[in-house]
Amino acid sequence: MDHATTPPKADGANGHTRNGFGGGATFAPGFNINVNKTVPPQGGAAPAAAPAGQGGGQLPVPEFLSPADVRNYCNSLRSLGVGLHFEVAMAAEILSAVLANVPDPEGRPFGSKLRARRVARKLHKAAEALKDAATNAAGAYSAFQQEYQEELGRVRHRARPSAGGQRINWTNQ
Image 1: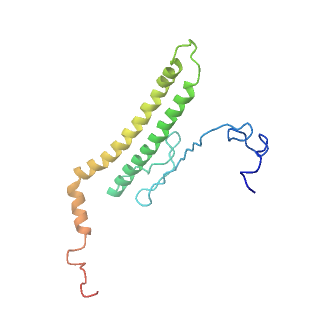
Image 2: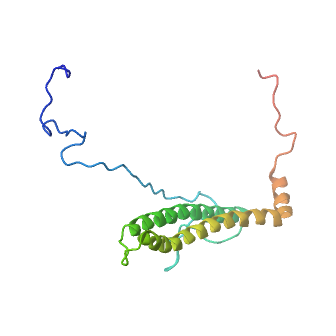
């Protein structure tokens, strides 16, 4: 079928109108939000259900019986803080956009946007606090390593194989 010699069909006959969209269709850009659940690493302290009124059990039990427990707890808190930071920051932007469409009762220019920004500012502050919590969790583990460097070093040196234990076998080529 040659498109150059075929007469154009009436609007809507082939599912398209002259503007390129289907009958009555409008343009709406695609927008997807993906939410990923972070699963804490296995080993060390296992996650447990939190008592009523405390979190969702996403942090490991704070039993600091080994350096691995300290590392796992700090890493879990950091990971949770970063994820929640992005979630809350996105929620603040969405709230601001939704509230900006509510007309200002006094009809002031940009009044609705200013009101929306004032409300969303609190969520932005919450997002920044979560980001700071993630940063401080990483800093807590770093401080633990610095403060207990001697104790950690003694155990690490004992666990390492001797320098003469593993060598490259140059004859096996």
